[in-house]
Image: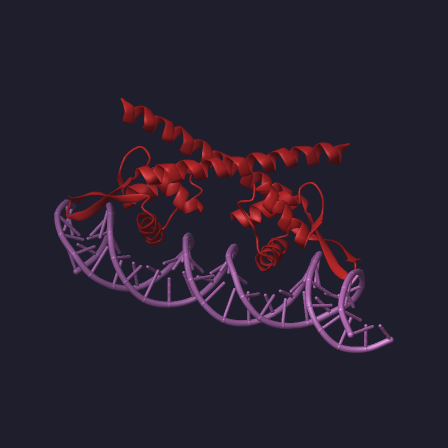
Length: 107
Length: 107
DNA sequence: GCCAATATCATGCCTCCCGATATATAGTGG
DNA sequence: CCACTATATATCGGGAGGCATGATATTGGC
């Protein structure tokens, strides 16, 4: 799973959000580092929907503009959790090795 | 940084390795989950070298076959560490939210 | 002559990036 | 009231980058 997809799923964990809201939440989640362009976001959402990880929640018309809300499916929550475990494992192993390297390099 | 690139850098933290050795170490590191094809691996190595994250260490001829060893540069070590922090952050935030969701869902 | 180990190359696909476009309403000037 | 523009949101199309995969080259051992 790519980082944009991972962050989109994370943004949908607590509540359904619409496209613009997801983009803003992803930016917030990543500390401003990841700023998904709107065009990028909808491609990501389409793929996640095709995988069954998110689904349409409802549509609202807010000030004449359509808002389509997406929510995380149970399958999406499972996939996100598994991916989070992988990321944490990868990070942990890299950090462990880097520590050993510094120790060895200084000796 | 993509996962293949991340794992290749991690595989080179402790000592220089040659192509086949990197592929085997990546498979071991990932618990058998990531099996880089040789063709994929060299593309990843080329890009990492272009970024200055790895460099050629030495070449050996072992049983008539060329072995080209690569080593991690200091810049590569820094990049790996930064990426590890990002991965850990992403994973931590996702897990936190998922926990809250379960708590909320069960209430 | 065939097999194993290792590296290189070519092709295609998938995902992302980015810019352009569509739409409806609110607001603003005439 | 009408035209124009700005805003919020969604959609579409082209292009680039990175990975997957299979084919090819090379050398020594059996």
